[in-house]
Length: 99
Image (cartoon, rainbow, N blue to C red; front, side):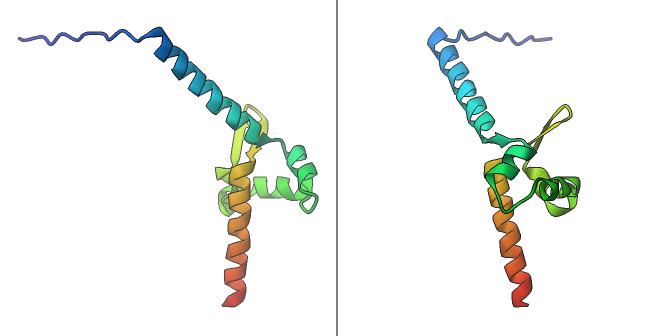
């Protein structure tokens, strides 16, 4: 029986630091995009907190689940994904009206 030997590559400390920095940047960008329901409602005066909660309750059927980040019992909404979802709702409604 022949055994293959593997070598472990040494990673340069600067490379490790670059990887850590990149992960930290991504985490920061994500955290900057997340909003609570109240924060989102305050930022968008046309949409009430109750409406957002209703959308979240029905997220699996309306597609909002792609925008939701749950951490324990806390619910956060990614505002970039939410904007895309909201625009999709507007386009879908316009398509229904033209039929």
